[in-house]
Length: 407
Ligand SMILES: *Cc1c(COP(=O)(O)O)cnc(C)c1O
Image 1 (cartoon, protein in one colour):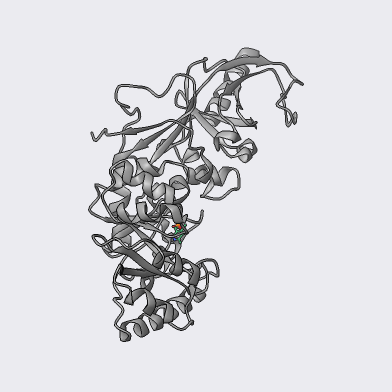
Image 2 (tube, rainbow, N blue to C red):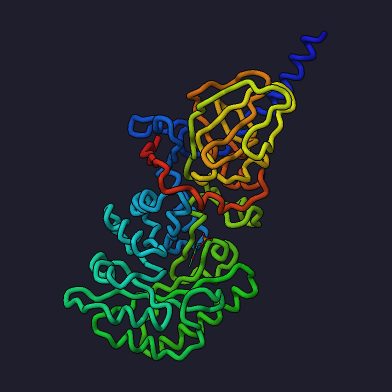
């Protein structure tokens, strides 16, 4: 009787830990990473070329076929700006890339990225010439930035490409939309400068975004009357792209959608589109120990072992960019089963394996990935009551493996 009860309980807890229905993915479960299965002992990111190219095509459909200016700021939200740019350089739906640091724009060119690159931020003066030579488009976002661009040493063979950045209400970057256009005329009259686009950034509340679109439309008309070229207009980050068709203009400018996440956890239109996660965050189990009832884990002693339990340790923590709030109930996939995270420190995290030792040292754990809903970036965010931009923090130092696997 006792043993039947134990088997019954074990089955229940296995069902509770069991793998949920896999989400649809176009990439295989195990990527062939140029013959390698990740690194030796350090955590790593696996990046799917196929998933990025599919997402780009899907996003272009969302935007009525308009081209995409892919925002890869903050190291492509922690996933790898260089890696993602190299992949998307091959997509017919991608017009170019937008970043906020001049050194990262140059890094993209250094690995051979060919498409237009827009610097949406400032640049240090001593890199100005190099940026122009590398065909990086600069932004004029203030009087001072305009003066800086005009002060660059003139290059007889190459005009400096510039986009005009207007503030229509985000209040963060750009020339105020209702300012006189003398500064634009100065730029436009400079024979070493070519104005190649204009942009602004919409806020999320729809009513105000509509007002911003109106402001942008008014200023576009005025510029046009002054003989300024008004092509390559773009104002829509992911949320406006999804919610406001009038924001699509000549190009759309999403960031988070490229990686397969929606800007908010609950979005009305999300179900209509089949975006998918583009990466896996993985680490190998380095320790599995049976802890006793009453033992605790970690500095804060946040988790108290309620009964004798096998506890696994992964060599990844918040210093690698894995959210420390994961200890509030996130799951990790090992050997097709989900286990609960109960502790996150700087370089380690711990999982409850249970009464049975179901995992071994060296087993590969997937912390974030497309495999089951609980570990997708948004599934993870949902479990810990977070937001979908959490992956923004992955450290640049994580090794990255791009899969060319297209089967
Ligand atoms: C971050 C950013 C975007 C993209 O935002 P998502 O919400 O990730 O789509 C677009 N434009 C600007 C200026 C940004 O800073």
